[in-house]
Image 1 (cartoon, one colour):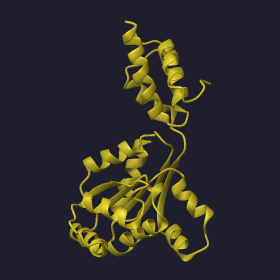
Image 2 (image 1 turned 90 degrees about the horizontal axis):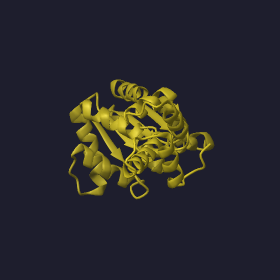
Image 3 (image 1 turned 60 degrees about the horizontal axis):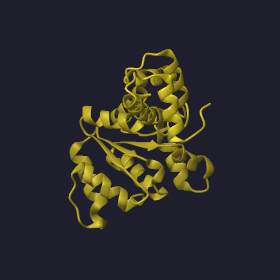
Image 4 (image 1 turned 30 degrees about the vertical axis):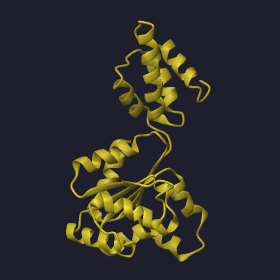
Length: 229
């Protein structure tokens, strides 16, 4: 999963295009984006929330990541544009939790792609793209749909990715791995494994025992987020 995300981000940055990455919760998309920004020049990650979902709220987050200082809200878009022009071709704006954005904010990102020739990646859950399939009653949606250069969609993690993540916990027992893979295929994916293993490790340590499948089962049951299937 992470490699696919990095390849999609790289494509957006190289081609100065708009891409969309939609994956289920807990599949590691945010960590992959952080890694990309830490290892690539001119890549910036801004995370939006329900409190910063408006055009202005998103612009404030982008300005902070780009080190743009502009206190006049009316001039913020232009100030960000000037920074992108100084960087030149090859910049990438990654907007995480993009499902929170209002439509006008997404349209503003399209403006940056069109005018300033920067790459933009909308990263979030399926709600981001869902609005395009449910709404087609205006020119703005046609513009946005036609601007999408690439979309990466994956609702569930690959088993190979789950095994790699589980190996990071130094789990080698086949029964433990099987149970954790089952947990990882539920909503929340890697995050479910991580939280369950933290609690399972504490249970095992508290009993003075080596981690076993029973500890993982007890941790999952104790978390009480879903029945074990």
